[in-house]
Image (cartoon, rainbow over the protein chains, first blue to last red):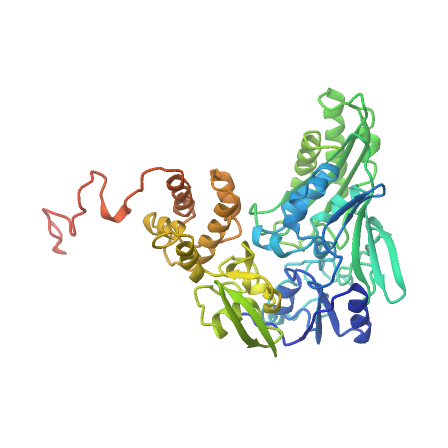
Length: 335
Length: 193
């Protein structure tokens, strides 16, 4: 049995009120959306906030709306709803796929899009019970001074494990935060630091109020491929999203690749578009380009022993999953 | 401490619980509904699955306050819900699990049956792959899933009008009653040489 540490639960009804409550208790209060990440972490003694602010009753944080500026996704939209939402499936297929393979069915019914974006980093030495961590003398990320992944490491390398983030990066999505000084919008690709302890440039008194996905190219295709031991429940051991834009002749006019579950930040693999531009899926040139992209990803993506699964094996799987993602992207829906 | 107004298995209940209690703690230790199992207690195993507004949800990581204003169905509520809709006896899913021997220790069974019930409410004719996906958040460490999936398939087949299958323990392969002990030879414990 794992009990939660005692806390006071507050249930504000507006985003402004939630931000006010956060600023009232600096460093003592935390936000909870679906709780599928925070609750197990609190049970493991990783967070012991005095106050937990539930977003369940905050109005206006749910649902998907469409305008000329693209899709506006409410952060409280559950992952199950996002994966089945017709607008997301049509306009941002990689995001729908990624949302549909986060954890297992029960977790997706409660876990939210915003929660997956704001997910804490994960590490096999960190996501453990207090008793387990104490036995090892703790770790750099929590309560200790030692990194068990990188010998002598001075920087935490817990892995960004957000399935939806590579998809959002390839879609050039942005996040809107509400803070005490008002709203700010930031590109999701620019949200990250390479510090596994806190890997997001988000202040503790800011609340995610929207995720914006701009309109994509007419021949947009996208997909997400996820490596894990079981085809359910597990966090990614490697995940990659691709965007493949095809012009009216069916040749590639734009492409992008982003990966997760490597280091503390999600990573965009640069130079992918150049390799694929002008090739036509089904042709030999395209197959050749896919192979070059897979080898490029193999060179750039170096998994560490931070999440379960042998790091060498995960690295060998990188080109496999990149190839699969690229080949299945052309079969995905496109707007 | 807070007062929770819950709707559990059709009953409106008022119960006091600390802010940090999860739904499984309220169900088991305040309401005595121990059919919901506390397994890993951190959202991995699915033993604590309940239906929240008809959707399978993990009660061990759901703050109890989140259940307010929603309809909770636990394993204890399956039979009453089935009877309320004019059915007889247990829910067909429960009946099929029984006849397919879809359990050994039984710890995962309430969660399995609730995940299956939620699936069948949404999709009356799921194929095997859909069943596997729907049950993929429920871990079983005993039987290896085959009979569990067969039980759901049996429910689907019978709902579509297939003949009811008699319990496996009532008939042997030839349709004869199973003998209680092997006939002919009697084990004596003595070796032949």
